[in-house]
Length: 168
Image 1 (cartoon, rainbow, N blue to C red):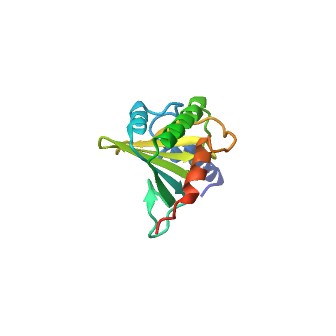
Image 2 (image 1 turned 90 degrees about the vertical axis):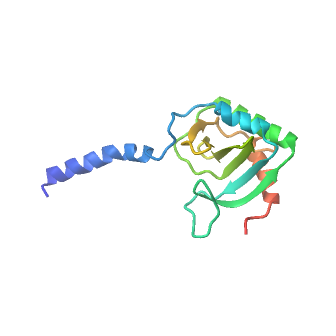
Image 3 (image 1 turned 120 degrees about the vertical axis):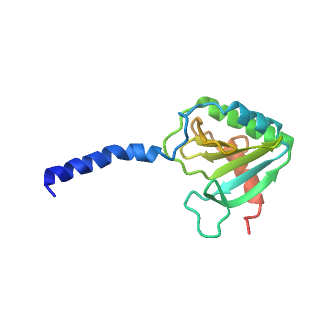
């Protein structure tokens, strides 16, 4: 192949890579607000399931949540803990400002009146993918990491999830 033609082909492919990488991303542009329907489900749910995820491809036999391997999960029935978690999440989301990576290590599942919402959370890049039913995920940006304490979202996960058993 002619060297000039080869360089042209390589340049074309490199220009297309960003488009190819975006193909599997959430459908809508990032926002700094949870979708109203998702927020309503989170507010009205009588329990949350919190997940600790492994940010890598699943291995054979792994239990997964939206193709991310589950390390452990636990159910939160306490209304006070759910209210605190949603309140802290709302504060982070209102700040906006996520990055482009997405390696979720945490997730929340809630359901109410037959509707399910899953929030896959990456504290590394401060993004949340919100799944409502079978629709494509919506990307929601969070503010920068706060100090990790029991009153921050990541801190709440860290306090609750280590007490749960890993899946069998």
